[in-house]
Image (cartoon, rainbow, N blue to C red; front, side, top):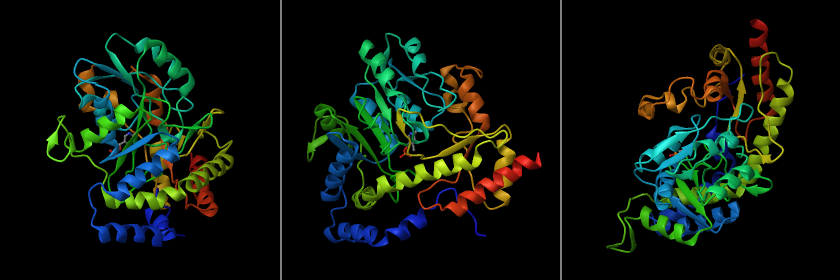
Length: 370
Ligand SMILES: *Cc1c(COP(=O)(O)O)cnc(C)c1O
C-alpha cells in the first residue's frame, strides 16, 4: 500500500498534461510573458466562470486582498471586520493597508463567520466587512449582505478557498463589492507558482485594480497612482486557463469524496464530520473533521503513511504578529475550541474510493485503540 498524500498535484498534472504543456509552449512561443493575451483571456474566462463582470489577475491571493482593500480606500484609522480562524493573509491584507482588523467569532458547525455577531462589531470606523468562505463553503451571505447594506458598508469576500462554490445557486465572489481569489498551487484552482485575482462587477474598481497592479500606470511611464508590481504571470495564466476547464468536474469529485467520507465516518465515536448547509454548494477545498485527540490522530495516520493537515492550529488573535490588537485568549471561544480539534484529511479530485476507505479505516482503528 502506497502513501496517501494530503494533496497530489502530480496526479492532476498527469491527467491533463498535453493541455498544460500546450499552454506553456504558447506563452514561450509568443514571448508575451507579462500581461498579454493569456492573462486577458484568463481574466475573461474566470470572470465568466464566476458570473461576474471583471476578473483582474494579480500576483497572489495576498495581493488581491491588499489591492482590493486599497481600491476601496481602506487605510489608516479604518477598521475592517473579519474572523480569527482564517489564513494569516486575510488579516495581513487589512493591516498592510494600515487599517485595524476587528474580529468576530465563527459558527461551530461550519467554522464560517457567525453573521449575527457582525452588527455588534460595527463602529463609525468600519470601512469594510471581510468574510472568508472557509474550507470551500459559503458564509451565510443573505443575512450578511442585509447587515452590510443597512449600514452602507462594503463587503469584500475572501474566496481564496472557494473557487466555484455557491450560495443559493450563485457563485461566491459575486456578492460583495469585490472578492479575492488565490491560485496558490494547492487551491481548488491552482497555478504552478503564485497567482491571484480580484473579481468585481464594479467598473471603477476594476480600473483601479488594473492601475494598482501595474505601477499605477495605464499608459507606459505615465503614473497616475502610487502603484505596485503585482501582475498575474502569463505562464501561470496559461496554466490556469487549461485547468479552469476542469474545475467544475474537479469540484464535483471533491464534493462526492466528502459525501463518501461523511457516510463512512458517521457514527464513529468522537469524530465530528463537516456539514454542508442547505444554502451552500460546498467545494471542499479542505475536508476538516474534529476530534478531541487530533494531534495523536494525525500522528497515528502518519505512521500509516496517510498525511493530514491542520487549518489552522493557532487562531490569528493569538499569533505573535497580531498580539498588538489586544485580544486575550478566550476572546473567541468557538474559533479557539475548533483550532484545538480540527484535522484536515486528504482531499483532492484524484483520490479514489479505496484511498478514502483506507483513511477512514485508519481513523476507526485510532478510535478503537483509545
Ligand atoms: C490561500 C489563502 C490566502 C492567500 O493566498 P496566497 O495566494 O497564498 O497569497 C488568503 N486567504 C485565504 C483564506 C487563503 O486560504
